[in-house]
Image 1 (spheres, one colour):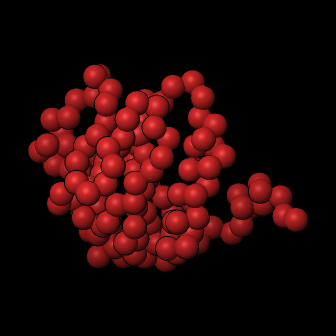
Image 2 (cartoon, rainbow, N blue to C red):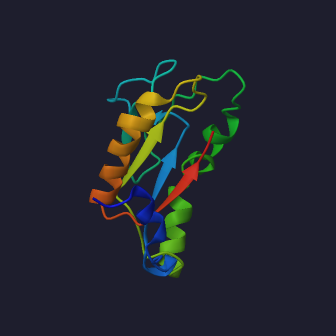
Length: 135
C-alpha cells in the first residue's frame, strides 16, 4: 500500500500543461440542483460556465454584490479560459466543484466522505491543479 503523503512528492506538471478546475466554497449550484443548507458538507458539480449559477452562501456576513456584478469573483472561469488561451495553463476542466463554506466545528463528513469523493471526480476528469476560491 502506498503512503497518502506520496501524492505530495510526485513531480509537478508544468502549469502550461496542466488541466485546471475550480473548487469554491461559495455554495454555487444550478437551479436544478439541491440547495445547500446549514452544515451541509456535500458538494455540487458545476459546468464550466457562469450562466445560471446561483450563489447559495448562507453566511450573513458575505457580501453578494461582487457576484451579482461578475460571477468570476467567486467562480473565475472566464479568467481560466483566458489563461488557457494565452498558454499560461494547459486547459480548463469541464467539471468544477462547489462546497458550502462557513462550516461548523466538525468536518468529519467532508474529510472522510465528500472531500475524497470530490477529489476523485476531479482526478477522473484529468484535473492536475485546483484553483480554490474560499468564501
